[in-house]
Image (cartoon, helix red, strand yellow):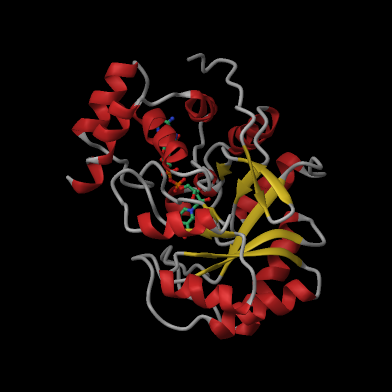
Length: 291
Ligand SMILES: NC(=O)c1ccc[n+]([C@@H]2O[C@H](COP(=O)([O-])OP(=O)(O)OC[C@H]3O[C@@H](n4cnc5c(N)ncnc54)[C@H](OP(=O)(O)O)[C@@H]3O)[C@@H](O)[C@H]2O)c1
């Protein structure tokens, strides 16, 4: 598998009327340490974004809370005016505090302001896809999302949001959102070792709704497992490639947004989309979440 000139397979997904490549890019890692402040290598961050688009990626995931504002500014600097095919998904519902925490910010006035800030920092008149970010840094939290989600629906009807999604959501919250307005995407934590959403993914696949796993490689705690290493050794590729290929095999509605600040890793992650896993590989990998 060449990672020098990787090419994306012709594998796309429809987020409503927006077509995206199943392999996308998550921009969170472009901000400074712990997603606060600017990157040490600003030119390098801009180069990664340009390389992602040059290699054919049409789905970038971001949030104005990254940095805060840094990641969106980098995207604008690197890619504006945006190519016609590029879709930028963002999130609202969390702010940042001076300690780097992610306090909840889901009151209607806070959400409206965050949408305005995203429009401004990305330099667009309308946002392609906005996820309502729920729960907290520890994970999803039960509770009604009606008031917050209805605020986004109102902004959608005003034309400043194209499509809606939810993130860090419980299954009940996904159902509640769907009862209010159509969603095109659920963005939750999911990877080889973190399989809480298996049933939800299958249900969303039947409804043609995308499932976008965040922390596909484990995020700040990389997925490590003897089974993963064994399969990677057998296929002579990096464990990260196997972890990403497994997600693409897991369900057709899974869209990847691995994060990286490295062009080498970006190319490797794109090349992973062409990795074939056998039934034997998949069975071995399937055991990891049960370890
Ligand atoms: N909705 C939410 O609440 C939420 C929460 C977290 C994240 N997200 C989104 O999900 C995206 C993905 O999550 P993430 O970036 O935090 O975690 P991730 O994709 O699971 O992992 C990123 C980490 O893996 C490393 N990495 C990436 N490719 C690699 C490779 N080929 N070989 C070795 N290491 C590699 C990166 O380091 P290098 O920079 O050194 O490559 C980085 O430290 C984010 O960018 C963000 O857009 C959403």
